[in-house]
Length: 171
Image (cartoon, rainbow, N blue to C red; front, side, top):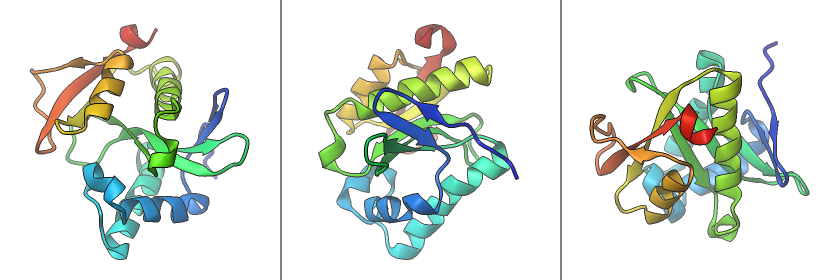
């Protein structure tokens, strides 16, 4: 059986997603909160999307980490590289499952841990984030993470700008 990395921060445990995350993720994908992820979506579409996130670990050896709180074990989001077949390179992405988890620094804490893992442990030198132009919070987070607008790499998702993360910016 393949084992996947587990990352820990002061407040979070990040691990490959699985059955324990189903309720939180299907609830998120069915909600208005998922508008930047194609939501809200019906149960079948949500299941397929979540299954793709889980399966990417087996197909690529990396993927979204489930973000869980260290003190409770509750799943509050996901962060990591999303890399469907039609993307030329991985997209660093993040989400929090509900408003109650926002403005607490969880997404930043998780993304910093994931980017450090990608650049230090896996030896990546770059990855992108496709940020919806209407998603001000994600744009601000991308910039806080050191990503810069990359006008030479068109976004593959309509209505998004491409932000580029580099190992140098994370170091």
